[in-house]
Image (tube, rainbow, N blue to C red):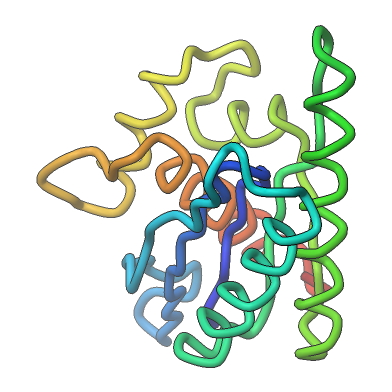
Length: 167
């Protein structure tokens, strides 16, 4: 199963693609990273143009990587509602593109991702990044942070799907 993880954002939208391979000898599966990066949009560009850039870039990423499912980090913000609204709009575009590609979408809160990756729901960003590196057997932490966060969302779904038939 190929999983596309998304860390939604307007200025920087992280993505990560992993492959979960199950075999008779390893029925829970092994994961490996196939691709990761970010979609960036210039800060002073009007929001509609930024959303269009995200739409077009994500469409291309899906077409190139051919994921089976998508794992998206749920929106969580406590301070800046204006930023939260634009991120929610970017998240809506992400969901639209994924639905247009007929991909099943699974959503996880930041705490669910932290708990699944590190075993601790209040883990720090650096701890999550280290565990992403370890779980994917990488020599370095994926950069930028948004790409590592997207990989964490994908890994979370790979772990959930091992125990949930409909995932």
